[in-house]
Image (cartoon, rainbow, N blue to C red; front, side, top):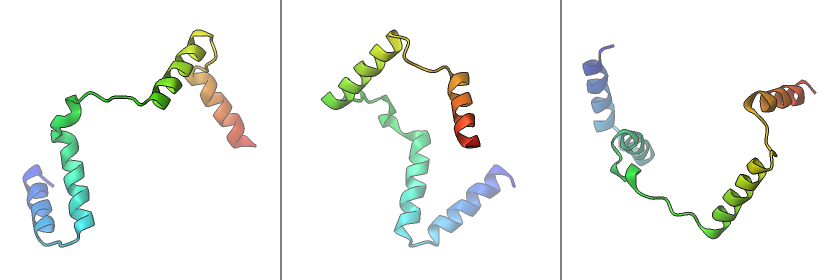
Length: 80
């Protein structure tokens, strides 16, 4: 199916639905690609700041797993 055909099919389906949940989800999905708010600055609350600082301290103290180590632990857990 070509891009043009897909667009026409979606437009037709959207124009024929009254389901607010579907329309809201389509709007949300389309907003992901065109969202201008993506450049907004996210402000952390105090709890989030505390958790981030704790995580940074753990990393600095070597209290973390590498990607391979975590995958190995997950595999071992799943085999039980």
